[in-house]
Amino acid sequence: MIRSMTGFGKASEGFRNGKITIEIKTVNHKFFDATLKLPNGIAAFEDRVKEALQKRIKRGKVNLNMVLDGAILKEERIVINKKVAKSYYADLAALKKSLGLKDEVAVRDVIALPGVLNYKALDEHIAKIWPRIKTVLDKAVDKLVSDRGKEGNALAADLARRARSIDTMLAVIKSRAHLNIEEYRRRFAERVKDLTSGREIDRGRLEMEVAIYAKNCDISEEITRLKNHLANFNKTVSSAGEVGKKIDFIAQELHREINTIGSKASDFKISKNVIEIKGEIEKIREQAKNIE
Image (cartoon, rainbow, N blue to C red; front, top):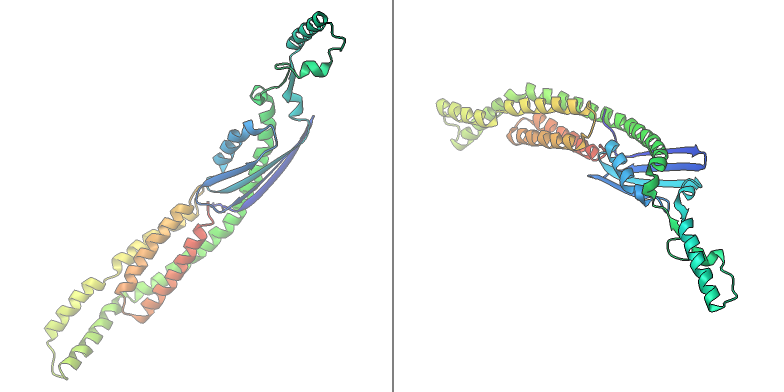
């Protein structure tokens, strides 16, 4: 079934050395657009997070917030190069002796030197840290997709109801299509009678004019195309995936056909139903903006 672009998902998971919490909110947007709020030191995962989101979310403005409690990253970040530290210490001690200095060489002096205290690149620990984040991310996305699906079901029901309404009104239009010609014949005859001051009119000429009009006002093809578009519309609403843009496109085609019918119609009830159908189509197009 279709999914709404509006939704919310949240998941938390505790690990041996901390807890990860992820919240995801989505709202309407023409394309996929993700804004991530990640903890300090975890920027290396931004592309991976976006890639994981885009596999499940095709359209919508996505706002993700990740919170890390505990020492999930801290244990992985700091590395002391003891070999370099010993070399520095030996050099400093030799320098101190050669200069006759009395100050002791402190740990703070050694760790301040380049290459002793390093923040190990997160990429080196990606295999260990990423699966934890991915586990929580997948759970949050699952809840988000479920939430979007529930609203999508409501949207699908509304769209199906509007399609049925259009189909009912289209049946009325079809049943009265022949009246278009009869009404034109009556009006045309009255108009000719007025213009000829009541004199007998040429029945052959009247029939010829009516036949020309009948050809120009025939709405059977538009009705057939409308019914085909409606069938495609119902099929699309029942399908899964990214269908919002397709629904909007079909609605445009529906509007094009009903607009043509309206321009050809002279029957009052046909015109009335054309107006009602246009209203339903506009509501469908508005709803399509909410669909993934």
